[in-house]
Length: 113
Image (cartoon, rainbow, N blue to C red; front, top):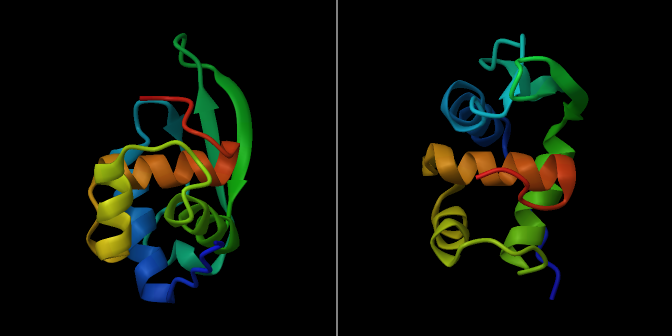
């Protein structure tokens, strides 16, 4: 069964702050200020071990909604504790869960961590 998710602007902003400031920092960089970023696409730079950009990706609320829906529909392999956390309260997720959602949104899978 497919789960449809529609984040509010406040939920998306909270999520982006957690993901950008804590969750994805070990594999990605962005120059976008995450506060008030829910209204526009966010450029995420995938970084190599040498600190150079491997590839740039665009993250949008629509991609986040689809990724959360895939996770809640069990269409992507992810730890049950992260899936449960997302199902419980997407605004209160920790950095590990935020990182997982961003990776699913950008890559369709977990590549890092």
